[in-house]
Image (tube, rainbow, N blue to C red; front, side):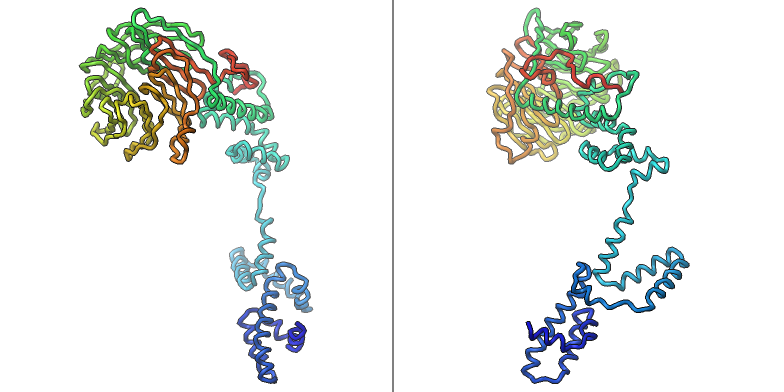
Length: 549
C-alpha cells in the first residue's frame, strides 16, 4: 500500500486528475511508461498504475454524487471570472425564446456526467410535483377535484382524507363517502340487494359526509356476516303450506321482493305475498300439472303436462294466449327480449317470436334429442338444451342451427343453467357437471347428492342444487372452477328441511326459496338472522335503515 501511495505522489497531479474515463487513464499510463526506470520496476508499476487510475476515475465519477469527502477534496476551485460569466450567461438565456432555452439546456445536460444528471433530477423532482386537488378549487374547479377523488376505493379515500385539510374539505363537501356507497350499489349485486335498507325516501335533513364515512364499515360488517351465514348455514326458515286440494307437490316457482308465483301439481298457479306469506290469487285453466313458469312485469307464461303453453296477465290473472304445439307435456320454458324457447317430453324444442303477449308465432322447431327434453336456457348467442338421452346440445340462437353436443353424464339430465361461457347441469347420475360451452370441455364434476339432481342455479359465487334426496346443497363456484381445489372443499353447506323431493329453487345474495313434493315452499333467509340463529323479523332494524338519497 505504501508502494502505491509513493507511486501516486510521483505522478503529476494534473495528469491523474485530468482522467475523465478509463480510456484517458490508459493514455496517462502511456505517459507513465515513458518515465525512466528499470524493466523490473515497470513490470510491477504498470499494472499497479492501471488499477490505481481506474479506482481514481471511479471515485471521480461517483463520489461526488454520494457527497464523498474524498471527491470533495479533489474538486478544482472556481476561477475568479465564474460569477461574472455566470451572470452574463443568465442574462443571455433570459433573452432567448422558450424553444431556444430548452434546446440550450438539453445540449448543456448532454455534456454533463452521470452524477450531475442525478443531482439535476433531485432538483427537478419537487418542482414537477403539483397538488392538483388543492390547486383546482383555487381556480373554481371544485367539481373536477371531487370527480377525480370519487374514483377511489374505501381504503384510498381514507388515506386521501389524511393528506391535508384541503383534501379533507373536498371529500367532505363533495359527499364522496355517500357517492362511494351509491357506486357500490350500482356495481355489486350484494350491495344492490341491500339497497332497500340503505336508501329510504328523502328526509328534511341530509346527513353529513362523516355519517356515511362511519356507515361504510358497518355495511361491510353486515356483508361479512351474510357471507358467514351462508358458509355456516345460519338462516331463518319460513314455510308456506300450499294445501293442494288433490295431488300434492309444487313443481316450479319464481319470486321477487313482493311476491312468489308457484306452479302446482294440482293444475293451479298460486301467487303469494312474500311478506305475509298469504295466498293472493289462484289462476286456473290448465288441465294438467303446471310444470314450468316464468314471469316479468307484464305476463306469466306457464307450461303444463296438458301439452299447452298459456300466457296470463300478471296483475289480473286473465288468460291472454294459449299456444298449442307440443304433442306431450311442456317440461320447461324460457323467454327474454322477444324470444321464447319451450321444450317437451315429445323430444322437440320450439323457438317462438313474441311480438306481444297476444302475438306469438313459431319460428323454428329444433329436433335432435333422442329422449324427452327436460330443460332449456338461452342468451343472444346460444340455445342450450338437456335431455334424458344423457346429452346437452348447443344451438345457434340467431340461425337455430346445431352447434355441438356436450357428453359426459352417465344418465339423463334433469336441469341446467347457462350464462356467459359456463353451463352447469344436474343429472340422474347424482352428479353436477360444469362445462365450457365454447369448447365443450367438462371443467368439474361435483358429487354429493344421493339421488337425482332435479334443480340447479348459480351466480358469481355459488351453485345451489336441489335433489330427490330432499337435500339442498350450496357449492363454492370459484373453487369448483379451480382445478387445484380439493373436491372435499367444494360443498359449503347441506340444508335439510324438506321431507320430499326438491323440485325447484331460486336464490339471490340473501335467500333461497325452494319447492318440493312435500307441498311446501321454504324461504331460507340468510340476511335476517340474529347472533343466536333466531329470526330478527321481516324488517331488520339496522343502524343504516334511514339514509336519504
